[in-house]
Length: 118
Image 1 (tube, one colour):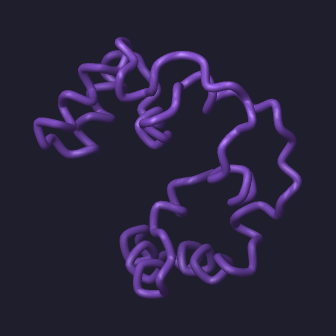
Image 2 (image 1 turned 135 degrees about the vertical axis):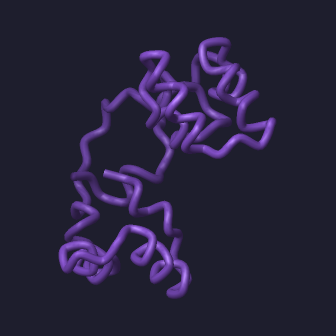
């Protein structure tokens, strides 16, 4: 459980290595996206190939290494306890599907991809 701030802000670490979308290890998955395959299919292909599909949720313009290092300490409120998002987690606890919760976020002018974070 991490705070929204720690999950959405960039590191102060140097960005060494190629951007994710140009990384040779992940090049074929970005080609799949350019060919208009759905993200779910790309993530499934990654899983099949033994790679972590959550990599595709990272910033495609920064290197994997700079985004995966977790040197900074998270001092914020966990996302599920953040008052701004608490009602959406309550909706999940009440059994509403994730799609309905994301629609509510969008309706309220918030980024629905927030629900994909830790």
